[in-house]
Length: 404
Image (cartoon, rainbow, N blue to C red; front, top):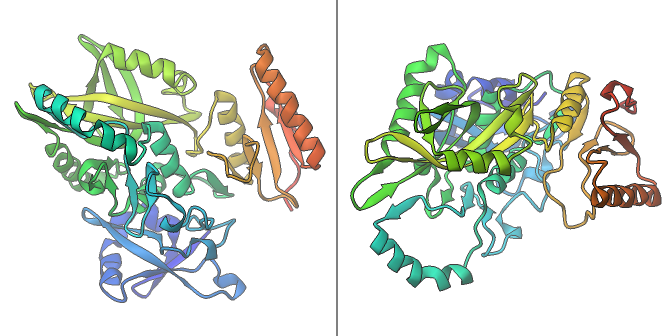
């Protein structure tokens, strides 16, 4: 567990992330003077406190890593740790779709957040097509969500007892910060659902209503918004489908085409919606219809374990839930590091040497079996420890190395 200090108070980071309203007054004072909070993750070993950015989001405040200091935090236990390649803007190029800056994330998505009339949009698209091709790349919605998950270290597990949506939303907001999305202030166009708290319900609803109020359609312009939230259900309706989110009673309409495409594109996440052993996190792009209704025009779904570890299959969900239940420390690699030529499904970090975990499937697919053989040979040639699970063998039959 990591402790933090601000305004003369020492408390757990988890408590601050799960209950942001409780600490808002103290964090506001710390933001004014001395201008930062402190992380005590290295104090047990005699290390000095590390500064944390205090960022405002609406009426609340969230803690974020200080620019270029992520590598000084405790790698195993602290969510503010970041490798030098991910810690700041010095390692990015001008053409990258998603950049880390001192203010927060600067992202360009492959979806428009403002749409003008057809005639004007056609003219602008023609004029800007060459400029876009020569400038920044754009990221798909799932790529954006996975990058946020990684930067927030939500793909790491430090043997905590649990993780709820309050922790996730706090870490996501800390990563987004005062950044930009498609050139707009990110706090104006992105809303991360807060965890439902009965005592804070009026404030939570007012904040969400204020965000939704910025989503409007006129005869000439449609201003859209992006919502990051848990999916509760996607139900058929008279004119298509209705998307229901956790933490709110607000609903969003969606076309049959959009939902059918989502079911195909996110085929591992789709059948797990509503299952108690899994969580489905979504990025929705929302606009208003001419009648004033809220409609999702694009979405991405990320399958997660019960504790919000991103997963690529229901079998990975089962493995992640076991690792959390056994209080293991592990990572879920989400993208290839330039030095890696293969990516394990999970990596135990509490063993003498990091231990890869591979969850194999698709045994009837020749190409998959060939790649599996390549990975097994690579692990053997490097003498790297690796645990394999090949469903449908029961997960209980898999022996994991003991933590050191």
